[in-house]
Image (cartoon, rainbow, N blue to C red):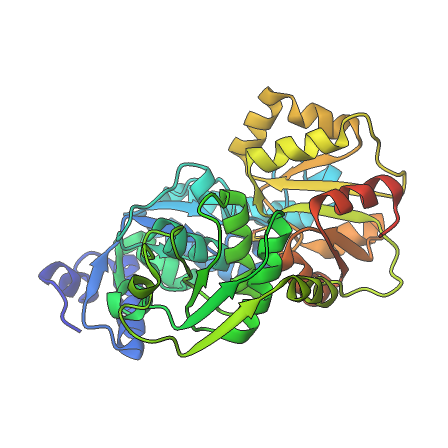
Length: 413
Ligand code: F3S
């Protein structure tokens, strides 16, 4: 790799051991993936911000980095935590989870992180520009940043994102390079997609076929909403490992199909029809007879539009006594939801706003032990996909209206 004089100095330890170690991590990654240089990054989104992911070893590593003078050179936001830092007792978390998470969050904060603990940092003002090199973790956020914003990030893990936050650098490989951002699989969408969950259905099916290849969608309407597109990206990145997708006439690097493919021919073409959406619903409902108890909406974290829709659909209704409803969102969005009266409407119906965390990244064992959750009802393809394996919860997947009906009736159907 060709390093600048500044990067050479850091690698030689002239700026201290914390930066030397960080640069070593980035340099080794660059060598493994064939990068020829570093690129400057001023935007980092940190995965591994939950103690469920970081564990005790990761928490100590972050604490040691902060104690040894680590200071972030890049604007850095945090992915969801292991619990809601304000309402962890109500959520059912135990003391150990809350204490461990506070240690990890405050270590990141000491180094300069914004402690928003969300997977939708772009809804909280962290919005990199078209073509900007960034270092983001969290698969759904990576897909959104690369695809919808046209920023350029590899799929960063905790150590590499931390190293980039400290140094303000990332090795130039993968999605940082124009030649790696060309589409590979053409996806023709042949049916209307009215619901947010429909975009999850499409993403789930296409992710399975593409795996790591870049899909180019034709037939996604130009007025698709932000909520629909974040659902698409999250699903693509969960059934597959997709870091970038193009939607012709929607995403910034796909003004035309030919531009999205960079002038090359697609490796494969697939079509999505109404019957495929039904197939995805069946595949994402990984439950048999498990009783309903928890409805979780907001994966990725809910926008103010989605929260308003939930409040509207719950008006005049009340949750079944056996049911809990989590509306998972970021702190700034909850503050706005309070001002708009949405929080009051959701709480009057018996639901709760859950911030900082989510069903996948929370420490779920104490919560399940307290409330006896065996399943989760959701309109998120990503959550439905991960719930059985990562949360130990059977999943019921459907549109938002169906999920809220289940919250009110405790019946799936
Ligand atoms: Fe976000 Fe958790 Fe879903 S991190 S995308 S709410 S699994």
